[in-house]
Image 1 (tube, rainbow, N blue to C red):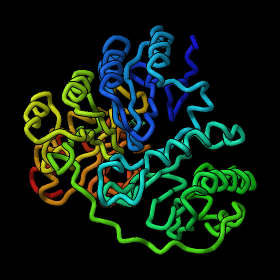
Image 2 (cartoon, protein in one colour):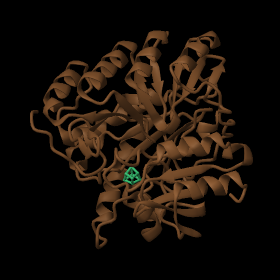
Image 3 (cartoon, protein in one colour):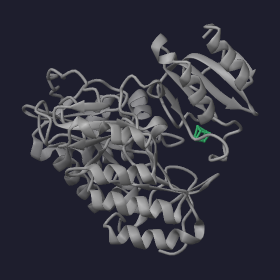
Image 4 (cartoon, rainbow, N blue to C red):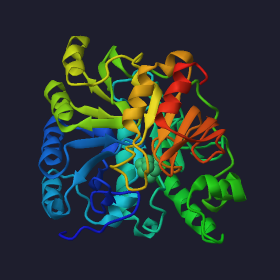
Length: 404
Ligand code: SF4
């Protein structure tokens, strides 16, 4: 528990990742539900042991940033006291489950994703033969309501429906229906089928989408012993807007997924029940009304879905990330001020081609390379650029002139 095992990617609380600004520790909060007392305690840990900044990731994980190496043992001890530390790194790694955040309060939800996600986590940890799953291999539990997870990356998807649970695989659109009580066991069988089939490839495949592309989803379902009966898609309600005041909750946006310790404390102070961390770069507060929004705006949280910052994705860039050769977030803020979202431009500023902030294609993607920026239109950071080696000033000029 004393010496940090430094990992190069996909960190946990047990296995931190070294970054340009210190260690990153990712906390996996079951179902994204965080009690206000725990949120305050995490904010204190971030202030005392880290650089006071946290990131809410694309799978709803909460990352402590800038933790000093000689403080690591102390952080682990405090997380253990809060019940936020897994028994061992393997258990933590396999507990990679994201769930719809508001199942208990969303009348359009088809069931309680939190309960199912918790059962799934317990089963994943108990099945030690799944410890060899690739680090990023993950599951989603979608409640079938307005807070659906269709856009959230997951290798195995569970979606609650009227008559049970629809199971589907990344990279494939078909779904197999199982009874709700059987869903956890079926999801584990799919994970085992992945391990079995992926091991037959050379080099072994690391994500389900790669496997379904190679062998077909039907082969994975067959190895898992799951039938061919397809789920009939339920009507999926329109996605809810997350930011602002709505019937049962208030939502705030986090530009670039970044949250300060003070902002987390403010959210905890205002929360009526618990905080709901979402994979949408937003935190929801159930049971509070819109009159608290000005207080949240005052501490720098986004309270309007029209905020230009929400149309821009950006990774931490330099100097926080050692892989970056350019500064990203100041540039992203300057470009956001030019309101690209108002022109329908969804922008991504990435410090390098890895594209940590977004795996989606964006209308405009800027990619750091050798201290300058490559410009990709309608693509991802790894796609061929149409302009290379631009300075930040040149990019701004292109935006200002309306060329982009
Ligand atoms: S995209 Fe590259 S520069 Fe940005 S955080 Fe990821 S690894 Fe670092």
